[in-house]
Length: 69
Image (tube, rainbow, N blue to C red; front, side):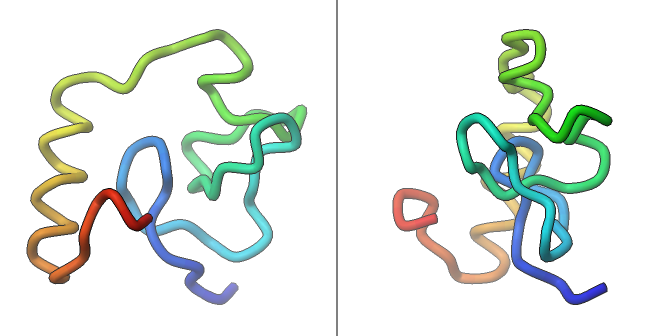
């Protein structure tokens, strides 16, 4: 599977073809449900503070602007 960038929910590497059927976010295999929707759409989960910190750190290391992703 080809890498498609970072998961819009947790910031981990996402795989091409994994996107939420409802909101269209790019997601990793851990953030998509068997119904093809992201965990936020499936249950309204919010991104935890830990996930926000990890995502910000990864984006900074890669030199990416979080507002443009």
